[in-house]
Amino acid sequence: MNFATTLFSVFFFIASVLSQGVRLSSPTDGQTVSPGQQIVVSVTRPPTLSSSEEVAVVLGLTTCSTSTGCPAPTDGLAHVLYNGPYSPAYPDPNPAHLQPHQNFTVAIPADMQQGKAVLSVSHFALLGAALIPWTQFANVTVDVQ
Ligand SMILES: *[C@@H]1O[C@H](CO)[C@@H](O)[C@H](O)[C@H]1NC(C)=O
Ligand SMILES: *[C@@H]1O[C@H](CO)[C@@H](O)[C@H](O)[C@H]1NC(C)=O
Image 1 (cartoon, rainbow, N blue to C red):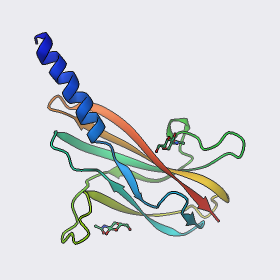
Image 2 (image 1 turned 45 degrees about the vertical axis):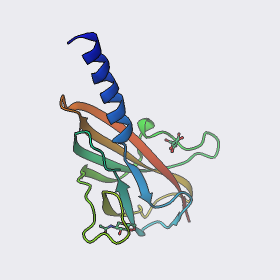
Image 3 (image 1 turned 90 degrees about the horizontal axis):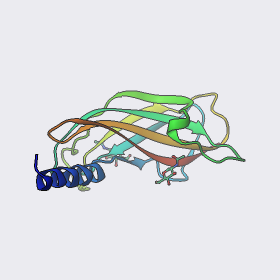
Image 4 (image 1 turned 90 degrees about the vertical axis):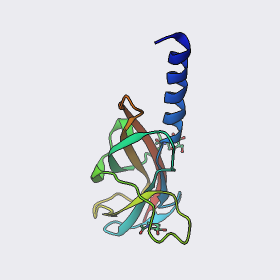
């Protein structure tokens, strides 16, 4: 590989990394949820031209501390709401022009502590023609009442 090719691959890799990230479209930041309640968690992956292969997502719900704030997913998830395959798709029909996503109906644990909690998605994918393993995180804060 010559320098230009290497540079191009690095650029392509960074560009693909930036465009492959998932986000949580539902619940929304600050939404109120109750222990035991069933909620829809919508994980959206914006469409992209670069190649990637989806592997899995883990949805976690972690109580935030009043002193140290909301923990990062890498500090531990406390409650795993979903752990399994991720296959985002366009809804069919798609009158609202939604981006590719997958909805997961999950239950807020009955013993979930009241107060602020962070709902996180840990996303695992393989990027580019070389299928480079990649993890990415996104989150929203919910109010458990
Ligand atoms: C949640 O996501 C925001 C960006 O959307 C980030 O700034 C923040 O650090 C994340 N919080 C946690 C606890 O991961
Ligand atoms: C997924 O959930 C979102 C938010 O509740 C909703 O707008 C969307 O239509 C749902 N998608 C499908 C395919 O049911």
